[in-house]
Amino acid sequence: MNSQISLFDTLGAIQMNNGVVKMYFVAQGPVLSEDVDPSKVKPELQEAIAMPLPGFLYALSVIGNFMKDERMRQALEASQKAGVIPEGLDISSLPGASLPETGDSAAEATKISASKKNNGRAEESQAATA
Image (cartoon, rainbow, N blue to C red; front, side, top):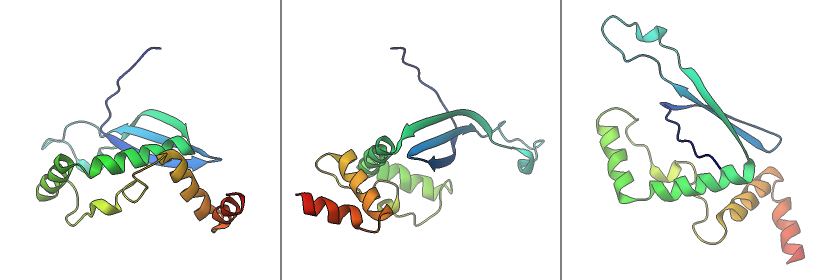
């Protein structure tokens, strides 16, 4: 298997359709200078990645755990002070932060998603079979 590492400026958009999550990674454009009008700098699509919903939900749990690391908290605070991200951003509100930390995270995240989608019917059917 060929491994490849890609570098992008940011995530431009995320979409989900039929259980497939698509993430669009973009470049922000040229480095801003006095002669570049910021309103004319447009993000440029670099790559799109698709993954099944359970894999994406597992990735959210990984990100949630990563955001709880003290070094990430310090980086987040420094970015807030520098004005890179909004002040008062609560780590617990970030993706994956409220997902289960123990057990099979992908399976648990899928159960959470299914129960929300089916207004709790998924949990009822699982309880009946347990």
